[in-house]
Structure formats: C-alpha cells, structure tokens
Length: 218
Image (cartoon, rainbow, N blue to C red; front, side):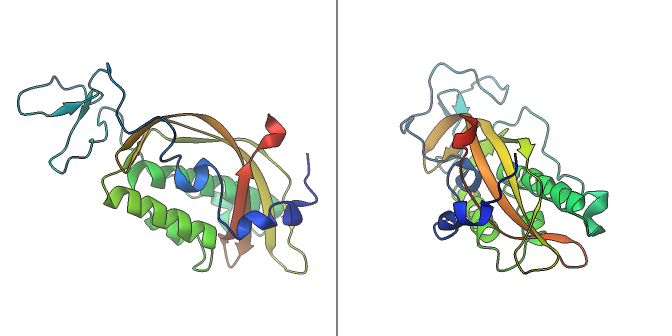
C-alpha cells in the first residue's frame, strides 16, 4: 500500500512528537508502581542476605531495580553498504537501519550512534535521544525491547526538495520489561506507523519524522 497523503496525514503529529512506544519506549504504562511478584531472579543469581530483592529483581544501592544481565549484550547494528547510494531503495534501507539503531539505543542507553545518523534539527531524533539519556540517567532501562518492521511503503519524494524522501514504516514494538520512574512494565506488542524523512547529504541521514498508532493494521 502506498500512502500518497503521507505529509498531510501525519503532519499534526509533528507538532507534538511521536505517539506510542517509539519515542517513549512504552514507559509508565498502567501496570502500577509495584514490580510483578512471583518472578524468578532474571539475573540468574540466587538471593543472598546481601542482595535486596523486589519482585524477582535485584535492587541497586540507589533503590532502583537493576536491569537483568543474563542475556547477550546488545551490539550496535552495522551501517548498510548502500548508505552512500542516492537511490530510493537505499533510502528505505537506511530508514530500516535507523529503526535498528533506535532499538539499540533504548536497550543500552547509548545514543551516540543515534545522534550521529540524525541531523541536529531533527526534532524526532533529538527528542528520542534525550528520552533515552534521561531514562538511563535516572536508573531506568529496557530489557530486550524489539522493533519489528512488518512493512515499508515505497519512498515518496519530498515535494519541491531534491534528495529527500518520506518513508512510512509499519512497526511492531514489544519488550520483556521496561523500567522508568519506579514503574516496571511488561510491554505487549504495539503497532505503530513511523514516518521517517531521509536526506542525502553525501550519505543518508534522518532529517525529520513523526508517527502515530497504526490503526490500519488493526
């Protein structure tokens, strides 16, 4: 499906930021303030008198729940080979790469790569990077957050601008756990429609975007 009305349909969202889990990584959902009970220790460690536990999670010295450490450490995704190709196909591949970098940032708190592949005036990108940094600075984290691109619409040339495309991505977000501001949430799959604006400046970079709940997939 091609969304020829992409610029008018998501334009109101640009003024308020991205809805759903993409920008906020699903923090502070309606699961309450208390960690779930009856869970095994996700770190794989046996409780000892020295370990303060809450709902199966280890409580750190600062009172925050510690992120489980039993899984593999997330690695930054490799840049696509086509990043220097000025073609619509390369723009779409880069948009998918941006989603993967976003996933990496939310799972690690490392926003260096996210900021590197974004323009300084990209409000979506800056807002997301700031949210990631603030969450981890305050002791929050995401455990195995996943962004699955289920569909990418054909890149649409930006009106009256060369070397710029709008790309609509249908994304399903989920996570084993999301912890922020004392709230611990399990994130059920959530469908979102992400609009990324890609600009070619010697290589592809994200220069804008918006998003909303993907009601068309419901």
